[in-house]
Length: 65
Image (cartoon, rainbow, N blue to C red):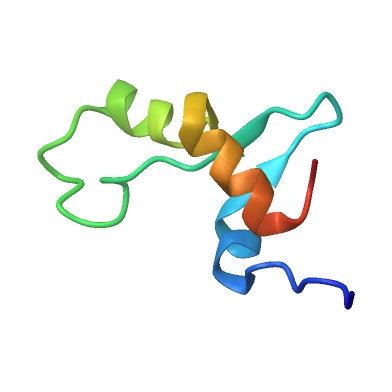
């Protein structure tokens, strides 16, 4: 059976840590930033851990186990 290709769109948006956690960026951080507080904008810069079935699906799309 041939190797499966990893999903290119997912590669650009998600990172898997050494321990197998899935990190992703925040939404709502691109435009209309004037009305958002500075603290809120700083929180957008910190990656978030994805959990549950969604994280499992992302790992499958990247070919990780």
